[in-house]
Image (cartoon, rainbow, N blue to C red; front, side):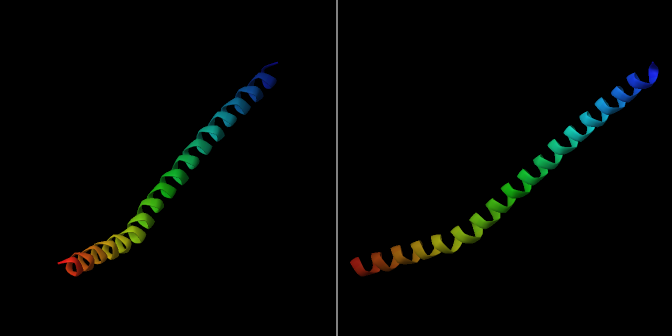
Length: 64
């Protein structure tokens, strides 16, 4: 009698552990993806902002 109950308990504990592990892995992947988005945004937006500022300065000089 005790064997099926032990087996169910072990299976339940295993499934809880696997679910928690999957949640942690998903959280880590989302954290890494978010970090990558911020790094890429800075790498792409930085030069574009500089070009915009240079164009604004050139336009300002042309108007003066």
